[in-house]
Length: 194
Image (cartoon, rainbow, N blue to C red; front, side, top):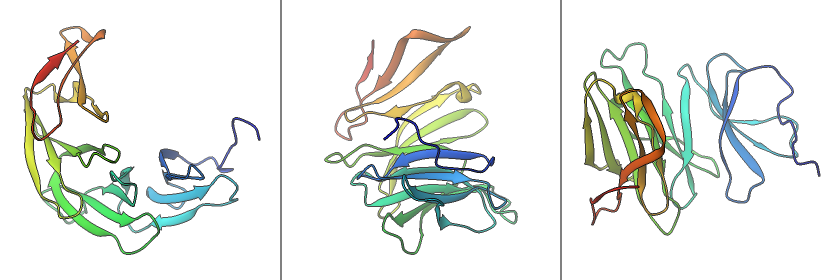
């Protein structure tokens, strides 16, 4: 089998987000039918299966910690004056999507892999970026950290199995060798830098 195989034969915008746990299918968003919808496609499948359609764009998709469900965000509805992004949950095997929570400014989320159960979401406003630990089963969340300032958009993060790591911006942009972060463990909020 070749190392690279094109899954999509169209020229639409397709954004892969994650693989299924067995490594046989990819979960991605595509605007092939208008707005960005969520699809799953096996590597030997000629066309993808639609997982989430509708009139709102799916903007991000990830697996929960035990890889049993897909978590995804939907862009704010046109009638929602609060501009809330909806974080949704759907079984990986298919089924009815359920709302985890809706907040304005959700811009990233990720869950660590099992046996960890840590999931993090970030939400921005005009003058800060908040990070929360959340439970995708019931929507409960608690604040982990706040980054003050209007330059929140300079921060990006990813969740490792043991810690949350954040690139730390300098006055002239990101410094490639310096990464700051902190423990995402509920029991430890110690700040580290290396």
